[in-house]
Length: 208
Image 1: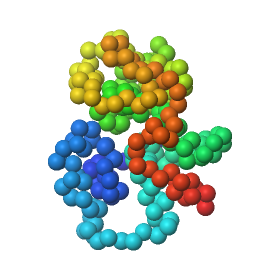
Image 2 (image 1 turned 90 degrees about the vertical axis):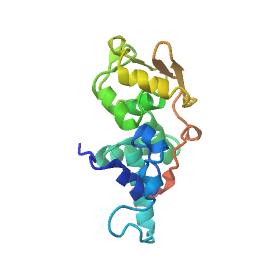
Image 3 (image 1 turned 90 degrees about the horizontal axis):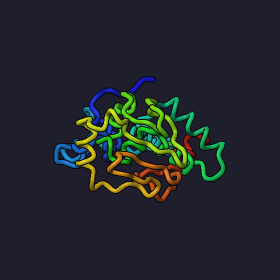
Image 4 (image 1 turned 60 degrees about the vertical axis):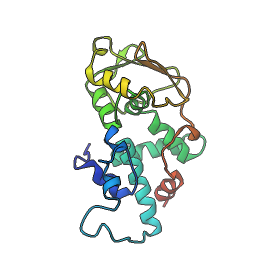
């Protein structure tokens, strides 16, 4: 799957909001949005009026970048959400929140979702006692996500745990700091998701 590998701050500037792609840096004055709050490029400072389609497209792209998901996979998630009972937009966000890399980030073991994805890729975590190195793995209610015993002294994870000790853990997750583990006590609801996404625009885009 192709993945955007250029400067991440450009993405935030393009979408006009912080996507927290670079972890702690996003909370400092070094953040690209803080320094240059306009779109990148020669014509970035010109405010172009978006069409209805453009607004919907930008919302979809913003959501993709938040979770680090490619276009093909995002369409797959939308199809899954459409086939589930309930509100399609909320189902889509619930699926995205259930990704293992997002859960690792939410538990504070990754400084950003991209770092959490890398840690999962490198086999640093187990789910219900079994090593899982697939960032897109979707967790279920009752799943226990834990740092592998041999990786509990990993300097990056330890630093993240210490730095993120104040970061609130979502109500749908339960964290055990001593065991470096977390448990999915229920799936995320719309009220649990603190990301400023207007999911109805994504539904409208794909419903055309």
